[in-house]
Length: 205
Image 1 (cartoon, helix red, strand yellow):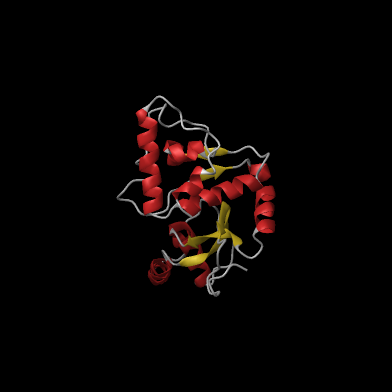
Image 2 (cartoon, helix red, strand yellow):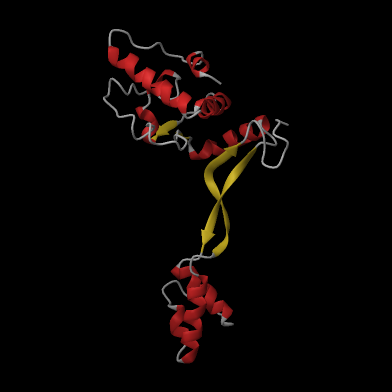
């Protein structure tokens, strides 16, 4: 993709009569081309095409982008509203810009279904890495100490093990803290690899 590819997808004309719009667009397209962000914007457009007819909100710093506005992703004119671009994208930040789309909770399954139909082997839900924190580590340590009774929500597991047993218990807790406990499903995150998947030959299926 090159800079002109995004131009072709603009659904709004650049407001005339102000050099600020021209300078802002020139800056944004320069940064997008410099860091090869074109595909990120096009991917968001693909998702919105699949979600046609569904209401959504755009949250966060992406509303400060004129390109996002001209593409029709956002309905906020950042130049008119005096919004800064720097939180979204700037020359010293090479990480991908975050365009956060928020769909209604009761329509998320529908958009997931459409994405997986369109990209059956290149899209997947995102997992959360759940690690032991103090509360969960103490409950797991109690099980490691062969305590099988129910532990109340307001009950301190450590109080169940007096004397030397308490030292063993605290040792288990220390060993568990920060370690992986398991995985959970992210409520709304999807990863989409439209050109290749890890481990393949680099060609789209």
